[in-house]
Length: 206
Image (cartoon, rainbow, N blue to C red; front, top):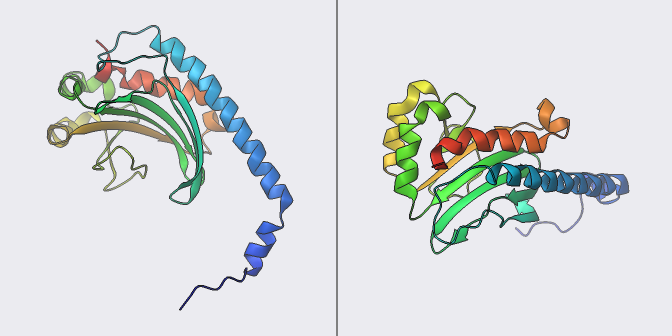
C-alpha cells in the first residue's frame, strides 16, 4: 500500500509554524558560534602538547560541518584536529546531535593504533573514572550510546577493556553530555570539549 501523500494535521501545523523555523535557524547559528569558539580553545590546547600522530598530521587543520540527516536528525560538528589520510585517522570531534546530546569523541585508526592501545592500557587509570566511554561499534561513525554501543571506562574494568581493545582495528573514546547539562545550557561548549580532550590526552600524548 503506497504511503499517503496527504499532510496530517500535525504536519500541516508544523509546516505553517514560521516561529519554529526561525528558532531553528537562530539555534543553529548559535551552535555554529559555539563550535567556532570551541575550535579556538582546542587549538590553544593542541599548541601546548606533543602528540603521537600519523604521517602528514597537521594540528591546524579543522572543519565545521552542518547537516540534516544523522539518523533523520539535524547535526553540527567540529573536527579539530582533523586528520583522515591514507587509512590513518586522528580526529577529535565535537558533535551537536539535535534530539540526542552533545558528543566529544577521539577517533583513532591506522599506523599508530598499536601505540595508542599500549598507552591507553599503560596509562589506564589516568583515563578511567572521567566519564569517558569506549565505543563498541565496528566503525567510527556510530553515534548511539549505551548497552551494546559503548562501554564505560571505569577503574574496575581494565581487564575487560583490555580484551575489547586487543581485538579492535580502531579506537573511539567518547563522552556524551545532555542538552540539560548546565555547562551546555550556559554556552560552555568550549570548556566541555577541552576538558574532554584533556581527559583523553594520555592515550595520544608523547
